[in-house]
Image 1: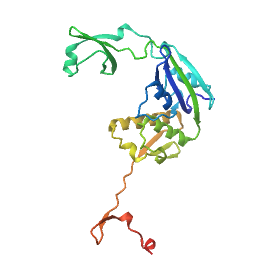
Image 2 (image 1 turned 45 degrees about the horizontal axis):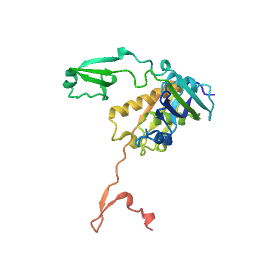
Image 3 (image 1 turned 180 degrees about the horizontal axis):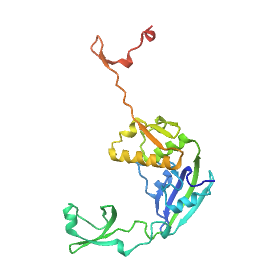
Image 4 (image 1 turned 180 degrees about the vertical axis):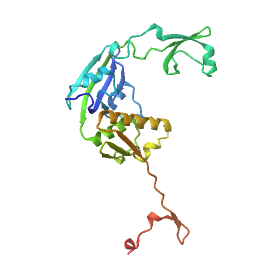
Length: 258
């Protein structure tokens, strides 16, 4: 049975009970049918550590005790989800504050002030009403969960956290990531493309490494995680007698030429 600290792969679909709206899913067909399909997302079972903070506590609690291959339907009340709606989370902000930031607020616009995300409700009389309640505050959530796999081997656990925390992209081949474990140290040599995602800043890549490391040392008998990068010298270009350029890697050895 699944316990806290176990590494698992989970298929899931999350809905708002009141409306049936799908807001999260690992199933491509479900996303397309619900009109929430994202071409940039790869729809596969999600690798997580149970109790590792990757899900709401209520979902982690539901996973505990399940078995490999088991499915479960879970209903989560607002107090165990994203909380009840609060009138105190609705703020009036002077319009001049938006003008200073060169922002023209309109109703429905999502905004981020500091670390608080909100949505503009109204713009009237030089003041802007912003709702900082979570989008799903006051909503009852429904989740369909399915344990696809309980990951047992250490290399698989490490790779699952890399898969979770690194930006999903078709060119990132996890099979090209090398993992070696010696004593209480894990050494990871990533697929080269993982460090050169044009859509991610270097800060985001560093954050991914930190989150991966944290999940590994908190849930495995590991104290140190090393990320190794290597850069190979490209083949030298040589000019043949006809003036064309050829890579040294393309020149056959004396044995091959015979």
